[in-house]
Amino acid sequence: MNASTAPEPRPEPRPEDRPARLTVGVVGAGRVGPALAASLRLAGHRPVAVSAVSDRSRRRAAELLPDVPVVEPARVLALADLVLLTVPDDALPGLVEGLADTGAVRPGQLLVHTSGRYGVRVLDPVRRAGALPLALHPAMTFTGTPVDVQRLAGCSFGVTAPEELRLAAEALVIEMGGEPEWIAEDARPLYHAALALGANHLVTLVAQSMELLRKAGVAAPDRMLGPLLGAALDNALRSGDAALTGPVARGDAGTVAAHVAELRKHAPGTVAGYLAMARTTADRALAHGLLKPELAEDLLGVLAADSTTAAAGPQGDDR
Image (cartoon, rainbow, N blue to C red; front, side, top):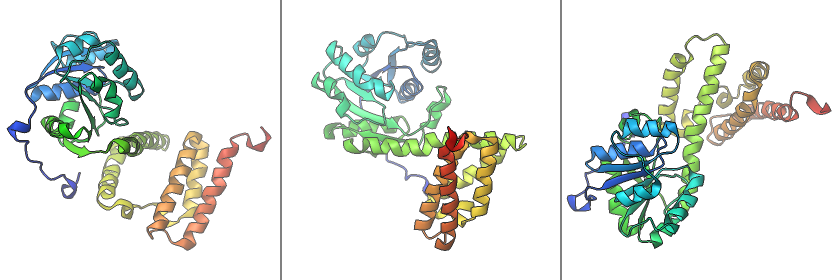
C-alpha cells in the first residue's frame, strides 16, 4: 500500500485496558483460528486447547499451535478463558446454540467469533449463560500457514462489541497487530458483502486473467500481471473511480466487441463476467465524467447486444 494510504499509528492501550493474560482455546481449526491463537500467544496469552475434525485441520493446528492438545469443543471451553469460534458462517448459529444447551459456557468467559457476516447478536444464547461476546473479523485472506500470523500486522478487524467490552475488544485486536474498525451490528452483512466483492471476486478475476494470458502464449502471466495489478490497486485505493482506465472507460466500443468475440471463442465461461463488469465500469465511468456520453451509447449498445447473445447460449434460440 502506498505510504499516503497507510493507517495512522495507533497508541498502545493503557495497561488497565489490556486484557489479563488469558488461556486461549479454538473451536474450529480452519485457516483463521490457529493463526489468531498463534498471534495471541506472541502477545503473551497461552493457547491451551483446539478442536479439529479433519486430518487437514489437525495438521494445521499442529503446525501453528505445536503442543496444544486437540480436544472436543466442550473441553476447549472448559480449559480456556478466551474461546475463538472460528467455524464457517452458516455453522456458527448452531454451534452457539449447542454450546449454550450443553452448559459448557462459564460466566465471564470471553467468546469471540470471527465471522464477517454476524455481529454479537448471534452470540445471545451464550451471553444469556454469562459469556462475554465479541465479534472480531480480520479483513484478511488466510492460507492456513505461519505466514498468516505475519499478515495480521496492520490488518483491519471489523469489530462489534457491547459498549462495556469495547476496550477489551480493541486491546485484543491491537495485541494481534491489527487495527480495529467499529462496525454496527446491523451493518455487518453490508460490511462483509463489500469485502467479498473486493477480495473474493478479485481472486476469480486474476485467475481468469492468468488462464487467458497462458492461452495467448504468455509464459509467465503472474510476472506480467503483478506490476499492473499492483499499480491498479494502489491507484484505486488512492483515487477511487478516477483511477479507471482501459477501453470501457475510454468508450472504445470496437475494442470491447473484439474482446467479447475472442472470449466467446477461447473461454466462453468468462463472457458473462466480462459483460457484467464492463457494464458496471461503464456506468461508473459515465457517472464520474470519464466516459463521454456520445461514446457511451455505442459502447452500451455493444454490451447489450452481447448480453442478449450470452443469454441465448451456444445453441441460440432453437433449444
